[in-house]
Image 1 (cartoon, rainbow, N blue to C red):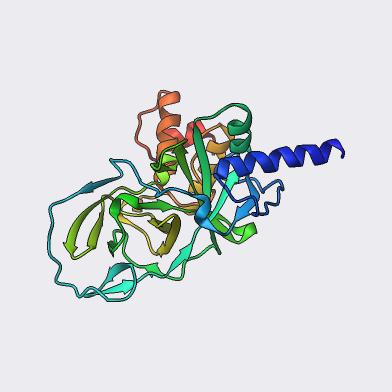
Image 2 (cartoon, rainbow, N blue to C red):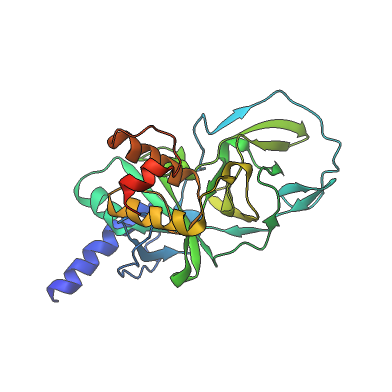
Length: 298
């Protein structure tokens, strides 16, 4: 057995540990993943398509969601399906699919050798575009899932691998998780509108892009994928796609995390700009104003 084989075995054991897998029959293929645009970390191909590796019901901490007083709905609740979005005067079901769970190689090393108290996993969806496309920037959802096990976040795309993913961090021994980075998380409020049915109201408009609603179903995580078309009111600025993409590239070079280099002016771009402006004593507008553009040298 050579050194390379020993290293691969150590990696496999570490990744199995970080994924929380108790079934030794699961086969994990350990390879170096592609570099993700939004981070220097990589995602390994240590993949299981059986989400029972997440042994506990995943819950999202407050203030990700807040319960509102019970209300009633004039909409007819369909007898089939578990999650829907409001389209006109009716509810349209969103098809669910099982989650694919991956652990990062860096996280596996942290847990195996540095005794990290947090677990970081990626939830993967195949393809780079959802079948359900929503034409409003602030959709309303209805679900039969427990809202405490419900999360809404924005995907990062990996076109070369024909997939999209979002990070979730959890403390060891806890069933409470949150999306990482924070900017990818979408806050919402909820109220009970019928027998076992909850209305989900977003706290903010969504930028155009790909999103996911995650929910626990027993010991498994199911995904409800959707895309948001068009432009939101929050994006109604004069920043062109080319300018935003150049700013994203420059911010990454300077050590900031503006998200994928897609030319879309979203929350992560705005947070990165605010951090850059604060570090360079520029008025913190969170926008690509003339002074910020000059300092970025783009």
